[in-house]
Image (tube, rainbow, N blue to C red; front, side):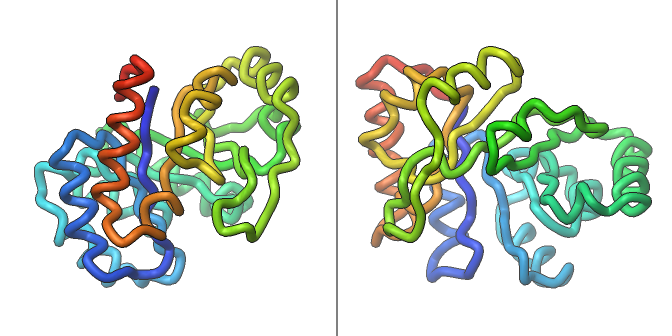
Length: 210
């Protein structure tokens, strides 16, 4: 099962040091989602992470930096996909760089998983799969529909939303390719310890983590 950690959208104390600890412990993919960051601030964020971990970073904005820092990949928001010529040029630049970037996006509806898209994504997020941990939103998906979508679309789908240590087994049962960790880490006093608990639970369930 693929485990993805998504950064908090707003800066938190010791956030980067916690992320580095996760990467040192074996985290394979760290998504940097900072919608209000300028290019300069995004550069600073990336540069605070040791260079040998840059190939594990996926950025949600300022995609040109993926080329500069040889990152793992880029995430396409709805705004990116509606960009028309801008999106075409973004794709072109990434292709001309000579690097092989992972490309991801998110879906909030099961029906959109069946849509044909020009960009080929390596995996996609589906959200919210479960009710929010904070109680801010509720999932509107039925388990049978999720299973059908995973099987029919044959896409690599990562569960996002309401993910915590008690839902790992259910995520596996539903057939998800992986899970995204967000609130269950960053709402706790020690995100790194919370991450290790997730890994330990996967080991207990005999789930291979990638």
